[in-house]
Length: 124
Image 1 (cartoon, rainbow, N blue to C red):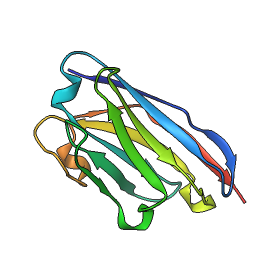
Image 2 (cartoon, rainbow, N blue to C red; image 1 turned 90 degrees about the vertical axis):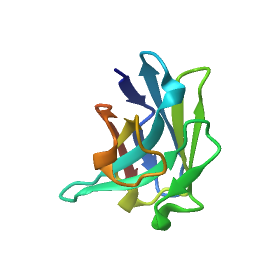
Image 3 (cartoon, rainbow, N blue to C red; image 1 turned 90 degrees about the horizontal axis):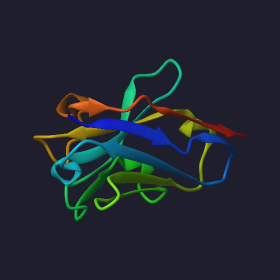
Image 4 (cartoon, rainbow, N blue to C red; image 1 turned 45 degrees about the vertical axis):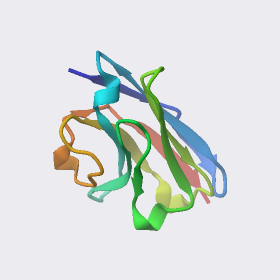
């Protein structure tokens, strides 16, 4: 079992940056592919990015390529999401998730464990 705790959200002006962190407890963090999703008010949950177990492979939502970067530090049991050039439409609750059996998936159904989310608000 993995427990995930996100941090790093907050209020930022458009054009600014934030780095989200997701700390995992439990064993074998490196055996999980990790992902970030978000849910904006009134919208469905949306895939943001995912990273393989070793960190050697990443996948991003097309609309976010070039602005967001996912990374992980297996020694620290942490996955990160660096968000640059933020826009008001990036406002959402951001969730990290862990997948035991799938890697490179953009489907939330392939993820087994979820954090509680962290709010990101981008003002115009």
